[in-house]
Length: 273
Length: 271
Image 1: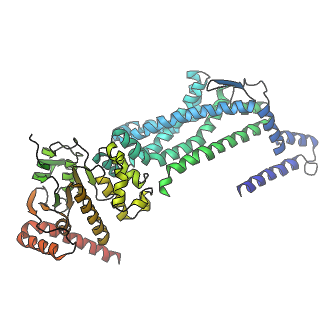
Image 2: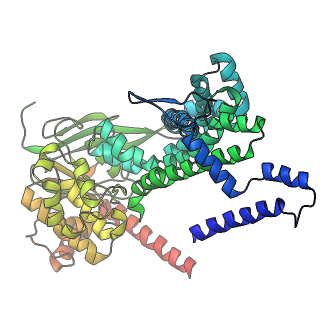
Image 3: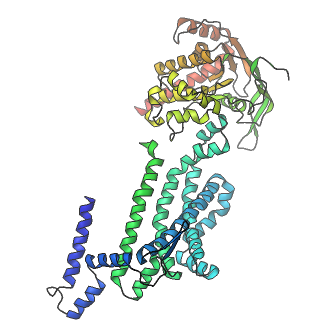
């Protein structure tokens, strides 16, 4: 069913692209040429993906250094790798930091009263402002980008985990104390499992948000990554390339969702079945 | 302190809570008694007589009291882990039945295979890998029972563990509890507000007053085991107690009556 709907989407796109370049529908031949450039067919985009995946344009220096191995790749692989790397690092740190802050705020009322305003400020701070400030203060580098993403994401994670931490049942903690479980066991087996559903919500929202913010920040101040390539294709009016990167990246995000996020979620909520 | 044969010695002079209006609320006062090793001691008292407060002190959850409590000669919170069974099963829903029992077990108990052994003894061999929310209320309480016994504790605290269960299910659980008590020669402090249950189970019944809670009556139960839940001996002894101590037990019966009335009122309101 899903596959059919996907094929239908491609078909509609293909027909529309064909119609816009066809003499049957568009009389003006210059308009037809413009349409061909600005509204590429799925075939043209597929070709662009294949080209980017197999060639190096020289626009970015496509050397990857991973786990002590260094190798040179094509544009597409390299830029997706850069974006993913930034997103993963930012994601991990914002989950840890936001989760810790959220638990502290949820458990300690005085702390929550004091920092509530800060959290609200963080939630409402435009991502663009944070990004620009970080680039100004820390320079045009990956650190600035990652810090900016973390600042964006931490309040959201903190708010979600705070809700979970304040909803933790005292009854079960009571059991842990009555049977004198160690602090570590209480945390790992009694306290944190009650927060997993909230962590999962934060993680899901986080993935959706982070990869979009990373693209914007790359466009703003980095010289590689998917965001940079999108900015580049905008300035070159290369719609084929733009869509090629967009679709490739959507595919990667969907793969991560299907092969990492969903299985983790299933494991964490197995007991509810 | 000389080593004593008592599993539990209680000498609580005062236990005070801060009341919301800024004053003090005296929950327990001059609560003194001891439980010899191996005894099944039932504690009974009207609602709000500080029974749960007392259990919290013995289990080491509440340390803010005046007086002295010793478990096998040691203060609460020291010494070996106690067993505890709460009013509700309080199982971790994200752990399987066996994981729930193993969670509180000591390394030694795990090494000896105690979690599995106890679950088999309470008739849950087929459900060790199930999650608690797949079990009935009675089965969940069996898990809680196995959990309370898993470390073969020197002292077991049970806080009205069989309330809100059907009579046959509760009776089956009482039998399981007595089986475990006998097999492991444990010492049990069993809190209840049901005099029949206390007489059926206990070697002895300790009566607490309304707040501030203290011991007002301490009677041995002279009946042979096994005792039938609705047997004539239990009923006879109960009536004898009520006859001999009408004033002391008035509070208890009154609280039972009040509960009965409130149930009735709910039923009328629902219809």
